[in-house]
Amino acid sequence: RKSLHNQQDGYICYDWFVSSVFLIMMGNREKTLTFLHQFSYLLVSAFLWAPRLHNSIHLPMDTAASGIHPVYFCSAHYIEMLLKAELPLVFSAFHMSGFTSSQICQQWLTQCFWNYMDWREICHYIAICIFLGPDYQIYMCISVFKHLQQEILQHTQAQDLQVFLKEEALHGFQVNNYIEYMESLAQIYRPILLRDMRNIGVLNT
Image (cartoon, rainbow, N blue to C red; front, side, top):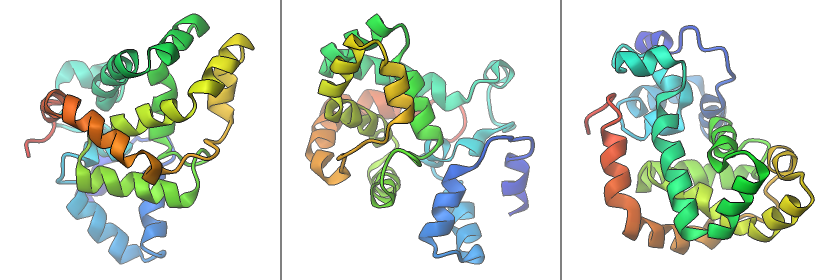
């Protein structure tokens, strides 16, 4: 538990993942700490738990010096790659709007989708990433964009896409409606995604 504290020293953002786990554990502090301690040894913790890697001694020096969360380097690239391949109209809409889909996803993921999804869907998101693998975090983002495709195109024309995605909840999105879609993405992209996720330079599992 001391190591958990040391990993988060200096982290100034709100820890949405720990708050989520605390609620899942029904407010039991000991169960939460026990889970986090065990969870911190898993590869998926690097992607679900943003403060987990803050100031980590295991990070490559150039990554730590950049000040950018290491997961962003990996996730941003693949979110853009999958979006371009799977949802080209949405990809083009972001390009026309002057910002990237990965910027929006970074906000969603950092907050564990709090303020965007219903609590049940947040629990489903955390569960599928833990049980199915960290690459499902990427597939989740692509699924959300698929769900929002028509609205994204409409707000691109209205020139308020960034405001819409940052301020609006993900109305009607249910994880269970997109499980099969995410599994189809995993069949195509999992080998390359997991290879790079494992090579993030932090954990070997």
